[in-house]
Length: 133
Length: 133
Image (cartoon, rainbow over all chains, first blue to last red; front, side, top):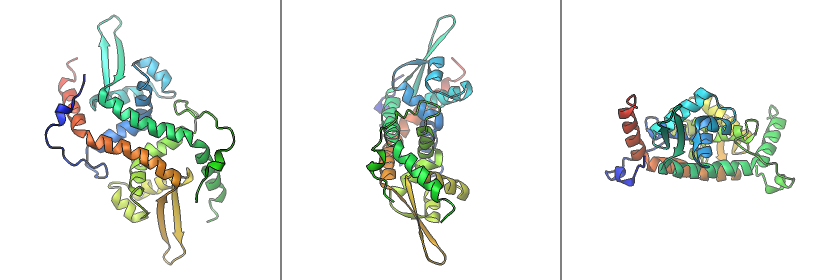
């Protein structure tokens, strides 16, 4: 499934994640949630079968991965392809839109990974001074 | 408080968010969590007092905002400045590192906001075909 720009030819409402009722909030929760972020990051590497993905996203339960994939598929970010084989083979991959989201998400992930020494130094400093202020 | 590059002069371990025990996971959860993302995005606009921030991040409870700010402060992404006034005035702002994280986070938020029409079209399509496959 490819979602094209055609679907946004009508006037674009002003979506605002700061507004409690804006639907962009739920999509951002799917994208940036604990498992959503890692799942999109993994799928950025290519197509995965369910159990492959589960091994890549270390620590995720079968149930959580299933829910995560379903939410991302519903939002049009992940494509689920079931092969008519026996047993059925199901592959997951990013849609074009999902890839664009994952590109930006990976910029956050890689940046945070690259600066974890600073984060850990800050944490140690915070824990040392805590309770003294 | 400014955390400089000096603190990463020692060899940098290979942080990997895919690994269950990597500390980058918790920081990413603070940054990309439901309220962490919106809090960092709000602070990208400038310094806020607690109640101002609570109004800006529509829907957050006092307790959740307090926990979110504490986690972000501990990770060195948010600076908390208490003025010695009566009553005490407390301001929150991004650190230099927090600003760099927020820049990247906002790229995700703005991109998702800009493509919500496509997301909503995909959701409607998914809900229509669900149960028929």
